[in-house]
Length: 207
Image (cartoon, rainbow, N blue to C red; front, side):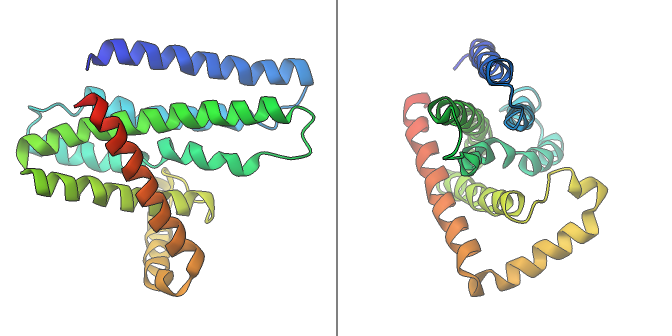
């Protein structure tokens, strides 16, 4: 896989998605979906980190800090899929909004899975097949929990830097009670399976 060629294509489709979002504002005069552009920007961060800072030959002492930052921002990519919750049945352009949400969600998911593929390539170089697969599944699980925190608990990745104590405490408390609250546990399990399945499907074409 040529990273430069892939990146150029992803930039192109991202620009197209942003254009359609701005066109909606210009034609119908509503700005309520502009947040998708910000979410798309956040989805690019893990892809950039994995593409330019994590290579197969990256020393472990550099990989670990880069990986931790990557893991913190990685949920922002598949998070775009959950924005479909904002589709309004009362929208005068429901067909347009539906395509827009799908477009942004698809780009975010694609960015995320390519980013995960970069991490997987590194893990395979330094671990055996079984451990690398467990690692990918673990990343999907942790990220699904992060997506839940962002979507339903309204936390952001940068809260780890500006409000780390409160975020860690909230994460710990929710982790302890997750088995007693149906929605969080169900969401994490279903989204983990969804993300892992999408990744393995894409992996079959990339590997």
